[in-house]
Image (cartoon, rainbow, N blue to C red):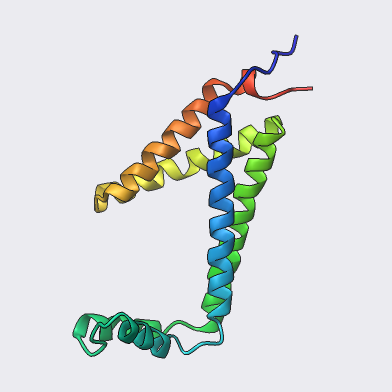
Length: 155
């Protein structure tokens, strides 16, 4: 006997988070695609000058030198991967919105995949930002796992 879907305010929060993440990553990908034909070191130099930083300082010069090694092909690969990840997040949001089991499992799998990576990174260099991401990720995975029967139709 299928479980009746109940009210799920937590699910709406997860959907909003996944939707926002998907849109953000697609916007980032669009920005990366626009950089493929640019002279990145010169663009970086102009940005520093606009922000009233000295581009000749060693720190900024080192970053500029590294940007000089980035090829348009590298940028296309990064942008393409970002498009895929953004699309995956939007697909998760759609599946969760429609309360489809595949949407729940996709969101659980994606979130669970990143937990060990985030823990590993925190072990090497702790940041509050990554700690917050890890906590949010764990809460989403636990919420969806514990409530999967109630949240998603199976018919």
